Length: 251
Image (cartoon, rainbow, N blue to C red; front, top):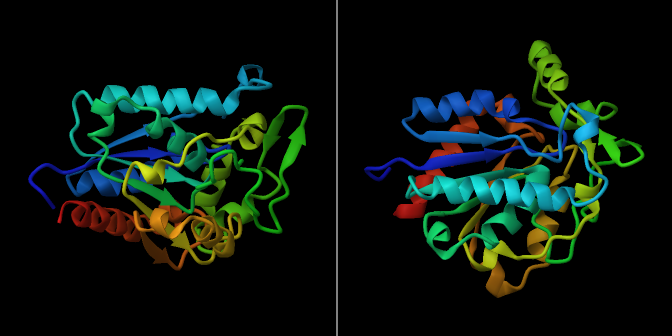
């Protein structure tokens, strides 16, 4: 790795929180990297704070503001988008100032949404067992936790803890369209998870397959034999993958 380690920004998926990164965060910090996490406003235990519309934009602005501020002090920023957060995260980095963009070393999509401009999170095929509970403008994932953590989060206490930290989400975030193709502006790496029951491997690959040959030139890919939550199932392996991505970005 270069003299200055990267600053990873770990951004959670739908109905999750920054807590769900804690095992991976510890591994990366132990390797000498700086790590930050964000709690997205579209996800909140307080349902009164979940908006009927504009949820995707709220997340975009939260991520953009965080990264703009971080760019004033960090020169090697690597955002890591998990699942849903690929949508607001991609739009956020695409809208950053030129000065802040220059600090983004690479975008990492961890089994994450890479929708075409105008596409939505809901428009990407998910797993058959993704029984999302929707009441009014609020959704939760409590009926499909096995898709999130099977087959490889085998520690039942960890599963229980992960489920206990899930929160409701504004469904608008999943149906509001993205606006940008950030892979046209930044080098990207997609981490495929072959055993994923939430965002199936075929759906992950499909998002890159619809891109033009020119667009795909900006991507590198890594494949993990993992379910949807490798940050919980195997944080050691995922940390190693991310560190290797960081090294390859400057080599």
